[in-house]
Length: 460
Image 1 (spheres, rainbow, N blue to C red):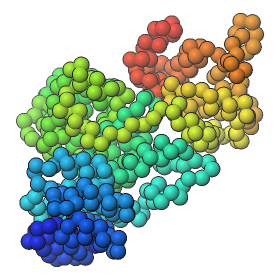
Image 2: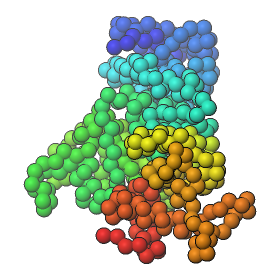
Image 3: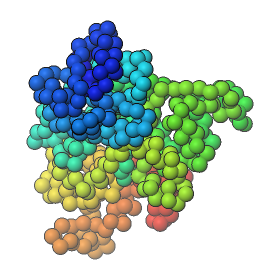
């Protein structure tokens, strides 16, 4: 394991020397500071990988020192050393960039595991080109940025990706909020990829796609005979994801019973299989996502308040595509390249008129809808360029289908006709499978059923 340069910031001499001696025996280089002011001086003049920072000190407190350190060098990892009574403040410090926290009296085994995690993360920082590019600003070019499969150019997304990198190394739960189709699962996978858990699995579960009993079994597993049809023991996702990350999508759809079990796991890291009495443990980092207002669900009594606060230690809100239109050109180029290669075509780009149409559209289905539009355009295009007639917005200009012109003269069909056409195409492509069609459109299955009824579209 990589040996670190560590700064111990602690006003108590005996505690400071105890930590210093232990870490030196483990092979690390250790310096000391008796207060926040001295710590900041040493950070300015020296190089440190990790700072063990006492939260309560005379003069500058831990939060002030943390902010000053991050202002000098944001890549230094800071672990807050805190008494039981200041854990809530330590969690707040994690939101401001602290790597993690450890409680007093410090257990050496726990401290060693924490230092090893920091060392592992710093090794990944050096090896991971994506993370280096995001934090060193080397990816911002004329054609946008690609981080894993997240393509962006806007300042809003740049700040969001930076936040993802900051929280990735911690063990804190993360709640990702955003409309359908904004890329919540992609962001969850990026957080996992940049975390010390990257070598282990990330498992995704759509909580809105399964019935309550099936979801409980999916998450926690079941014993043979737990219910009709349970002919053998099943290992749940919490066991499968041990050491890795579990991504719970549509978390707002959980039943009260499953909410109780999830809360227990987040508090104790313990659970029982359905129909079993054995208490099991699993080291899983939980990332959840929702397109619903969970605070409103709490007020309505549909979602537990204590679970809500456990899930949103860190909240990341992905803005809809209509609020970051500067990302659209980079996304168009990304999808054009992908679907041209997949379909064996050489599409060189879009006409200026087609580009203008795509830039002015508001994308209720967000990035997923734009992807669907570009894929369709590539498939039906007759030439090496995408023209307006290749887009679903275009309609023949005859008497029966004459479309209105907007104030700027752009010929556009009505939103409802476009929506009906996109839904029909998605259902056909999905073989009338409503769940897959809803995912492709970037809307919930419940909303899809409503739209099918509204437009009189039939489904198997």
